[in-house]
Image 1 (cartoon, rainbow, N blue to C red):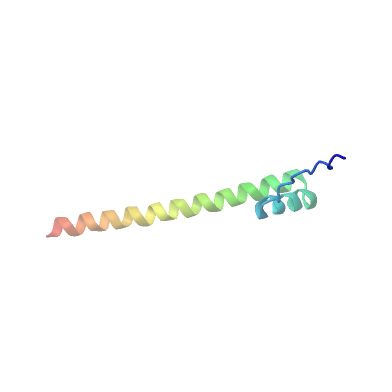
Image 2: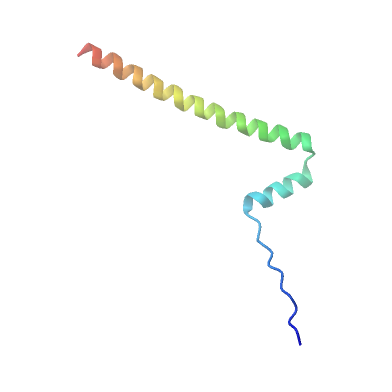
Length: 67
């Protein structure tokens, strides 16, 4: 008597599950727009961080020249 083969099905990650639900609820254009918007938010945050760092470096340079 042979055992029935067992299929191992990976449990999807939370992100993959959300993307699956998103794909069911939204059309392709909406998904693309949403991802583009999120990419823009992340890029804006990166630029803001870079501005703060540049400002700090400039202020340190001015302070060290005064001494």
